[in-house]
Image 1 (spheres, rainbow, N blue to C red):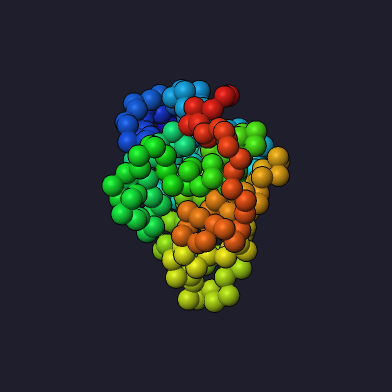
Image 2 (cartoon, one colour):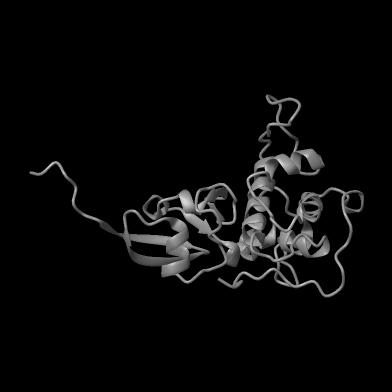
Length: 219
């Protein structure tokens, strides 16, 4: 028997946005390429392709990952959520941040983080927006579970939910996502609002007519 493993493809079942897909994938394929090229879910963007810009961020089992660095075969049996599916998360709320409104679902069909991005003008060209929103949802879930960040004062105690997050905490937790348009002040304000903080203290409201961040944004 040869010591070389010659099979280059695998038959897998991939669960994305609540839907199962039976796929044949190259063992070297990244989750990003599979989402975009095989499933035609082009919301996650290919930016640097080196895990540095965060444009490709999706959620796997509720945690954010750089899909450009994740092999598709490692996602089998796990729940993958891309920007196209975030509105369906627990009635639209990040884990641990449900309100009466989000538990019942939202009238406009948006996740609260998507709506907050609109309110605070957290996007310009929109290329990074899908990754920013997925990352924000993951970050709020981490805070809801008490996970500390590098700027948390008491790393052992962690944080007590999302409502106590400060702008510094949000900047640190979102530091893996880059916006070359410079919309970071609006993004921080949006995440704070979604976290339950007072948005009036952290950023301006969006101008009228801002575009909805689309789950099917241009390739």
